[in-house]
Each structure stands twice: as structure tokens, then as C-alpha cells.
Image (cartoon, rainbow over the protein chains, first blue to last red):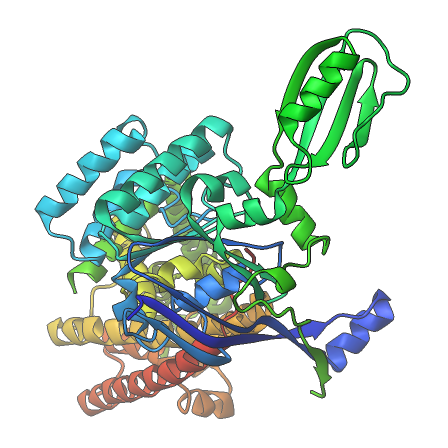
Length: 349
Length: 262
């Protein structure tokens, strides 16, 4: 049995519709009007123990709502969730002792107290044996360098330090499952890389199941094998990150810097001139239709060339195209990929 | 239970962080006592007795009322801020009872106020304002029991009011109304026997007089023994009812929860 099982999960929010202007505001005060917004629309998936899964999707896609339902904070409107054979909402406290979570935009650390105080408190909250607690603290100290700042009040920490402390805090009780909700948000490149390394390492060593939501595709590419793309409350892709890259990343761009300015150049069929600037030209082609080596030979035999580079599309641009509807993922990729526009309807109050 | 004790300890520690706030709290209490004594002096003018009560008894009532208020003060917007900031999710992600968590936090603050704020204010009150000792040993002990019950009644009322932020998100008005009602009906600002007869009778039907009026009356030895027992039993009954109500409202609130942002 999979560790996490989600079946036909639905979450509706009742939102207050605000009207424009002062008159509208008064009207809204006296006669509030509500609308049901479906944040998560009938999604199903399974996650095995030790898996590392990336959840991506544009803002408001329903990622965080799903994670909150998995962690027992929100109750589902309908559908079933089982996390290690428990219902996270009904058995919140039991479930909570086995999970950890990092919300990148907030901190669970006591704001005015030194970070170490929160760790000490967590030791009691999760009833961590003293020996285990010390071992874990030592590991996190050496990997995340907590010692540098652990006795400073949390409000004085930099974002990177705070995030390191928050991540350690989410793992201190050896959870079976950890949810990371945008763990690298706002961090610089080096700090991001460190955190990814740490997360990957912990996943491997302790076989912790991890769920990630992020907007940084590099996070996913570097850490997760599997990725679930959600848009408008529906899963539109569930598979490996490589697969999506192979399937949609067939385009290559050859950047050629010529010795001199050529007004017009002759291009073999299947190659398009994407852009040009001075002596530089960007040539786009499909790697399955055009052979790179052939193209380069042809160009060098006809023109004087100074420099050449080949660019692969980044996963980020592929995802962007998916979000924008440029790639219709539903037809080509197997799995539960039907795209359903979320229903919105008014209910009388 | 250990974990809740640790939460209370951290909350105690958290209170020490702001030194200026701490000193301001002590000064504020003393200032309030001083101002109110001046007001009551003016009311009594040169009379020794008003409404059958001696001036020094009323004085002790007022001082005791403010001292109790200073330690019964709670963080009114704790739950609201947890909801608006979304930090409530961190609480719910812990293997903790949310209600006990909030309660432990408040107990930590209460302990801080008793040890750090009440002590200096009490000494000043005895020396400077001539606070009378309890009527006798028995009323002293019963006062302590009744004051603890009073705190719990106030906490239970507050908890329900705080929970309303699950529905309203912005509870300033509700809390202001609650504070106004409590300060008049609980006898926090003045002895309830100064209220019009009908209003005084009405307060007896509410949980509010359990908070300050009952314990202070016991302290002053104004109640015969059987009325003391009756008052304490009433406190216990109100506490039980309010705890049940709090439980029901909390159950409703969890269904209502929408975590803000992110």
C-alpha cells in the first residue's frame, strides 16, 4: 500500500464576493454574496515511501490547499486521503507526530526567542529521546551550520539562516513525511543550492518521503524525480521531470557568432532564424529532424564562424508554455490528465 | 503534560524579552490605582462611610481589582494574529491540542505577571496605598481559590471571543465590547453594590461577577460563609458551562478554518 493515497479529493472555498465602490461595499456589508470556488477539483494520486515528489503549478493552482489537506490542517470537501493508513484531518494529532512541514513564507520558530529555544520545545512536543535529539542536532549543525546563529533571537536572523533553522526544526523528530511549501523562496543562489543538497541528502539517508511545492524549476530538477503539475485544481501532469523534458524539449537553438555581418544566410530546411543581433544569429530547429553536426558542417563550409553554442530548452520554459496553454499536455501524456475548468457558481446566502 | 509545561515556560521567557514593556506594565498598574484612588476620594469627599461601606474597604477593593486585572490581562489578539498570518498552520501541524496549547501559553504569561509584575505592585500598594490584609486567614485561602476560578472563567469567556476570529478575521470591535461589558459587570472597576439595584441583580445571573466581584468580596469578608460557598459553586458551574461552550465553538471553528495566504 502506498504511504500517501489521495482519491477524488475536492476542496471548495466559500468566498465573499466584494463589489466595487462605496455603494458596493455597503451593499456587501448588508447583503453579503458568496461564491463557491473549487480550489482542488477531484484529484487522485499515490506516493510511495521514500519518494520525493515535486508539486508545481501557477499561483492559485491548488498546490498549497492539497498540502494542507494532506497535513490535516484543512478538511476536504469530499474525497479520501490516507497518510500511512490514517485520515490526516480526523487523526490530526496522531498524523502530526509523523509529519514535518516547512512553509517558506512563515516560520514556526518563536520569533522573540533564540532558535535553540524552539528546538528545545520541539524535543518535548514530539517526545524525542534525549540521545536521538542530540544526534539529530549534531547532524543538522554540521550540515546546515546552525551553531553560527542558534543562540540569536529568530527575529535577528537573515532569511537564509531562518530557513535553515526552520528546515532543521521540521526534521528534528525524524518524521516519515515532510512537506516543503516553497522552501527556497527569497533565497540567493548559494543558499538555495545548500538547502537542496541538504534535502536530497536527508531523503536518501533517512528514507523520508518528501513533497515539495515551488516555483523554482531548478528545485524540482535537482531534487525530485517525479513531478505533479496542478493547474486550476486539476492534475495535468504526473510523471518524471525527464519525460516532460524529452517530450517537449526537442527544440534546440544554435547560437552562431559569425566573423562578419551576413545579411542573408541560407538555411537548410527545418531550421528557422529565431533572432539576430549584430554578427550573432539564433537558429532554432528540432533535434529529431535536423542533425546538429550536419548543420554545423554546412555553416562552417559556407561562412566564416567565430563561435558556436547549442542551447537546450530549460524545463522552466517548457512549464511556462504548459501554463500558458501552448502545450496541450492532455493528449500526449498518459495518466489522469483531463483538463477541466473549475466550476464556479453563485449560491444564494 | 510535560510539553504543555514547556510551552508555558517558553511563554514566560517570551514575556521577559521586552524590558521596557515590562516596566511600563508595572508603572501602568500603579498609575491606574493612584488615579482611581483619587477619584474615589473625591466621591467620598470627607465621608467615612458611603452606602454602608467604609472608605478604606472600598479602597482595598479598588486596589485589589486593579492588581487582579493587571495579572488577568491576556493577549487578546493571539489567535486572531495566528489566523491572519496563517501561523495557525504551524500549531495545527504539531501533535498538540490547540486549546491546551493556547491555555499553556496564557498560563506562562500569567506566571510571568504574578512573579514579575504583581510582586512589586503589591509591595507598593501595601506601603503606599495602605492595602488591607484579607479579613481573616480563611477568607484569604478562599480568596485564592476563588481568584483562580475567576481567572479560569475570564479565560473561558475570552477563548470563545478569540475564536470568533475564525469567522470574522477582525475582532477588534468584539473584543472592545467584551472588555466594556466585563469591566462594568464583573466589578473590576468598582464594587457592584454601587450599581442600580436591577443591574446588580442582573449581574448575578451572568458569569461576569465570578471574575472579580466574588473573589474580592471574599477577601474583604463581606460575605457570610454560606454565601461564599454559594459564590464558589456558582463559579465552578459557570466555568463548566463555558468550557463546554468553548469546546463546541472550537469544533465549529476547525471546520471553518481557512488558512490565509500561501
